[in-house]
Image (cartoon, rainbow, N blue to C red):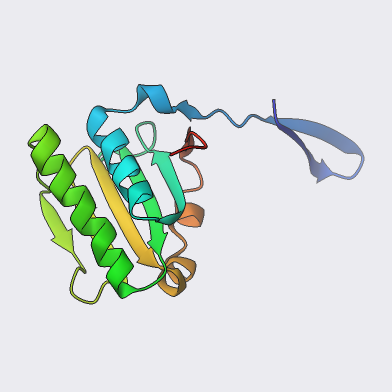
Length: 143
């Protein structure tokens, strides 16, 4: 139990709402999701998060959301993920969008989607806020 929030419906009545921050363990992820996360880390991606959408969405299971500091780094992260998943796991993306402009590259692997942003685009679209009902994945420190 990580946090308690007070919920006041009527000033005379107070209820306490227990909010638990249950995270999905990294060990539960598919090898392809783990490899994509490692690839992003190898290319010095910043502020990487993974969201578990299995309980709230039917179109995919996980989002990987990360950032590069410039257009070239965003493309390098995308290239590394695509190359390593193809070589090591024979997995190819269903679709890649936004690679040329590299403000927001979306890599759709079916079971998971990788979002690689430049920082300004990430702040503007704020996917973590839009998908705040999703469980976070507990990423290791040394990722």
